[in-house]
Length: 512
Ligand code: F6P
Image 1 (spheres, rainbow, N blue to C red):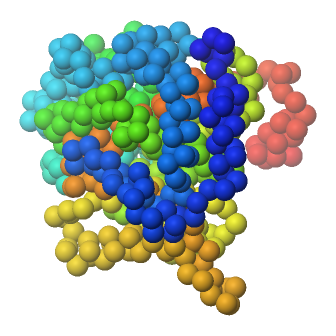
Image 2 (cartoon, rainbow, N blue to C red; image 1 turned 180 degrees about the horizontal axis):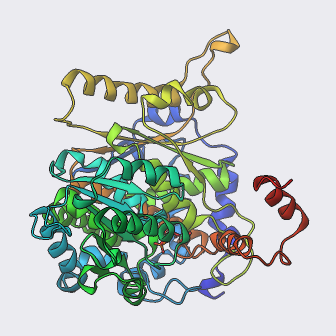
């Protein structure tokens, strides 16, 4: 069987796992035994994974590892790091790890990020009226928004206090209008962040920004002013739009949108925390790359996380995965991971183009604890769905008070224990069944390096899962049809529209 037609569901390990799933140990028994393989966290520098609260024994883990070994994981991992065209439907390599590993990148694209971010931070790049920039607005959507926005929010402790960074993604005119109302155009800089430089939402918001600049600063060519920066892999389009060549930062087409925060798309991060700290973020990513590439599968953090997901999704009928950071600065992590995981692995076709019938990517959702405890944890503890949780916590937080931080962490420990062990009661309403799995990712502290490791960890978890399922995690054809239909709706030609769509259009436009 060729590698691209690999079907994990036909392997002996898959069949064995099906049998093992019928008799999986309870988490409390695994914990009681205490000698299990998973009693010690896997550690990579300042990040550790505690996966002791899972109902698994050595047989299950070994079968999962065997499955991983038989899958295209090794070949694809090699292809990822060597620049092979593993994105087979777009005929492209997948180069985001090179952004954090290859010194050659530093000399070109990364140098441009360094120069521009430093000029904005030190005030040598100024606006039309020679004033320094105090506000930077990143206009972008999906990967051109979620990553930088999440990182800027997570690392706000390190942000420069003279420049505020804002993010506009949705094509909701009220949002951008509301933001612009509070800004001074003389001191506002826009970053138009779009890999393709064609995304409708981004281009419409960018035009709104440009006309605001034109009107308030009396500029006939606002796009060509220093107030407009373009970040894209299509320099020509940005140039045609009117952006000054010196104000365009490019990155390779081989960087997927959801993996692009390490590229020029991270300009807002570099402006906010400085290029040195931006480099530390990249170094953290590189540390995780090295671990993923070299650690044996049984002690490989992203691979273990992928195998846990496969165990639950493919053998215990689990459909979703909750992400619950116990740190308010990580509140955007769940939505960042939603795009990373669901856009990568929400597929039902294998790499050979054949339909597949085993389950692939899970539904990713979540929010910070303790807030989530007072919202959806009821269902996690007593509901009918089995939902594994990734708890994420920061061990030392000098920005919080010792009392609050301690209470935050104790809450997380209590939740993990309550989910795993439950509590029996004769009153069915007050019975906690337990045996509900969770992992704990602990960062020594929330700094750029550790955050870089955490992001790359999830990237590689998604990669390893996709490799074992034998899907292409790097395209996103599923989002194209909706874009095409929006274009048809914008066109005066209605002949391509079906009756239900026409009726809805009439109602929405008030003609119905
Ligand atoms: O529509 C999905 C998508 O293509 C994402 O993959 C991407 O991150 C986002 O749109 C934005 O694309 P661009 O950076 O080209 O504007």
